[in-house]
Amino acid sequence: MYPQQIIDSLRHVRYPGNGKDLIESGMLEDDIRISGLEVSFSLIFDKDNDPFIRSVVKAAETAIRTYIDENIAVHIHTKFRHTNLKPADDTNPIQARHIIAVHSGKGGVGKSTVTANLAVALAARGYRVGLLDADIHGPSIPKMLHTEDARPVSVEEDGRTLIEPIEQYGVKMLSIGFFVEPEQAVIWRGGMASNAIKQLIQDAHWGSLDYFLIDLPPGTSDIHLTLIQSLPLTGVIVVTTPQPVALTDARKGVEMFRNDKVNVPILGLVENMSYFTPAELPDNKYYIFGKEGGKRLAEELHIPLLAEIPLVQSVRESGDEGVPIALNAGHPAARIFDDICRQLEP
Image (tube, rainbow, N blue to C red):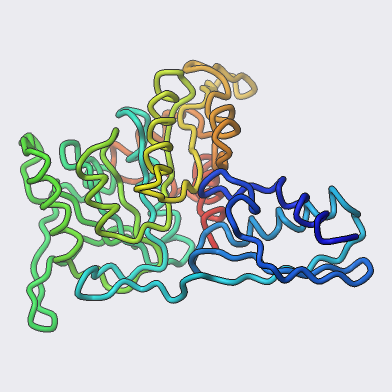
């Protein structure tokens, strides 16, 4: 065994954040040590809260045993270019270990449903969770979390007047929907919408969080750029349905975040409404919007497919009633959201 074999093996492992292999990404430290059937080396990650650390290390170990020798003892150390990436109070009050945006290329694919259920599922796992509804023109989080009638109050802290987020199901949340009447349309130009989002971020009493989720507007807009510039995003989850028109827009979203000027890791793809199974025919699957489109797109773009969520009436009903299905721990859909949370854990 010699160092080049290690390097060649690691070319088979892709970093999910950018779709490039570990060597192309410059993640292998120049410290390979070989002794018989033992090898040790270091992988360099940008941040100490990178969500892919565990999965990448495991994949690297597997690659070496697969392409060289299955009996090799592999010892991988992790190093970080930047550590303790806590945003400063004067520029960003969101003190969160992980800031995750949820995006969709088009509306109607279930992005807000996924966001609401992920927030509730993370809170159920014991994490401190914040949720920002950044979909200015179509805020749906208040309805999905049964807080439509809530109105945030102000609190004083360190001489500042801050907005106190609404808390429900263990999740702290803010939405423009709390500040307008439900039937009132929000007709704002891009600058006004971006400023409103900045205020909900900077002038709110979020406190210390483990996860801060952002329900982005569909498509690409000024709001996306505002959030990217305002917050150190851990990464983005892209939601789509299997149909080609949705997949085309999802691909554009992925490419936007991967753009060199944006450079936000893609944590994975969630395919919603994957298939329909009638209650009276539990063994049947009807692929109403197409089959495995999300799987093919994830493979093409070299990103994880986090879940395939079926089209289930109770998921829709629970969202309309403001009681996310993730609260029903025994429901199959709740287990899917819990599994996504597990994959997001560092």
